[in-house]
Length: 220
Image (cartoon, rainbow, N blue to C red; front, side, top):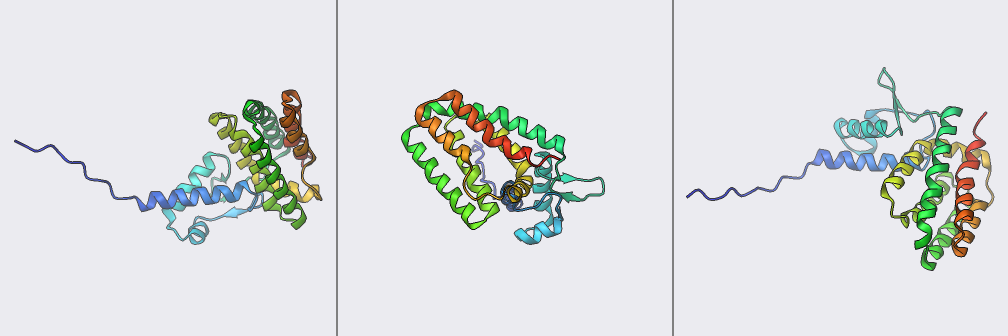
């Protein structure tokens, strides 16, 4: 009698693991505005930065190009996109549609502990403003929104929203410099007040205004 075949466990794929690490790290840097709009990148430079070979660096770049976080020219030049006015308007319109919907879906689950957590994150936003830390500000601002939106339990909408954030990351860095903030966003306070009051129309308006008004300043 032939014994049944025993499946042997697969050895871990170091290239795949390296590619995923590079992808996630580079994605976070782009989303948080650590790379300026139009800045060129090279596969060699990415590989050196993350101490990986060209293969995982190339695969990470391929995924980020597919998400719109990087552009790839016919000559092979890789760069963060420098957005046109039309593209900024389009992405702002997407934020205006997606994020009020997420906030509205989160509202029934916005318990006091969540609101306290959002207050604490907003205090962190204030600290980044005081330090004039642009990337820290972007990171904490997105954490404020993501923490609220996770309560919506709408992963597909949140994934689409994060893709928009990713495409806007370098541009948000430029926006921060133009705003010259001295305090956290005023509309964060309106978002928190609407959550406490259970005011769904007020919440939608506060979120929509918060995520779009700054982007309009970049046009022209």
